[in-house]
Image (cartoon, rainbow, N blue to C red; front, side):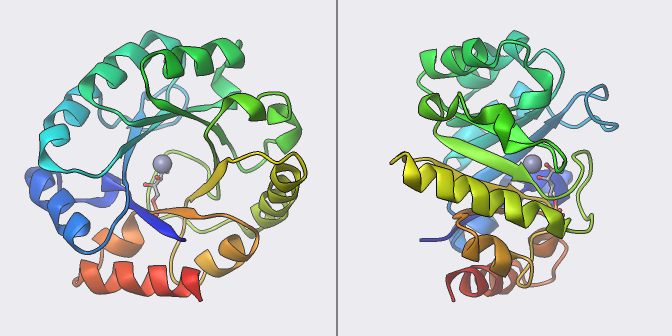
Length: 218
Ligand code: DX5
Ligand code: ZN
């Protein structure tokens, strides 16, 4: 079962509500919200106020990807704004286990994100505590970048570990996903795919989404 999570980073912010409804009707499973602080990544995007505004607009889970320093300071605000999933970068967490527990304490699904170069060893001892792992297949900060294929072996290795340990953890992929790049990632064991520019930069979003979904399910 492949799930597509359109990233609103590439949507038209002047009509964000409609942009979210459009992809929901087109068969999206999750709405991906990229939060950037201008410190951890060289870009600034949106905060809890956007999550709060979108909450009544859609029935889909809101997947909040925190690309911020000191994520602990903002988790409560995002949870109360209506986030269903919150993921934090392992590179930003000095006490990852504590951060994951904090996310779960609000009834939100916790996930951990790895930059393209970050080894999966860094999350070996947190796997029992998380619901999903998000692999970055671009350097975080911007939509529309090129997929980094050297991440695929990491996805394969983690899938194997998850199976061996009998865990139920979803693998989500973020960055440069389109109808071609989804194929090796799905084969490697990922099931949730963020797509920003490959959906929102297209004239026919429904068709673009379906094309990516079909390629992933093939
Ligand atoms: C990048 C963000 C991504 C971005 C993906 O830092 O985390 O979610 O929106 O955009 P595309 O699909 O265009 O690479
Ligand atoms: Zn993202």
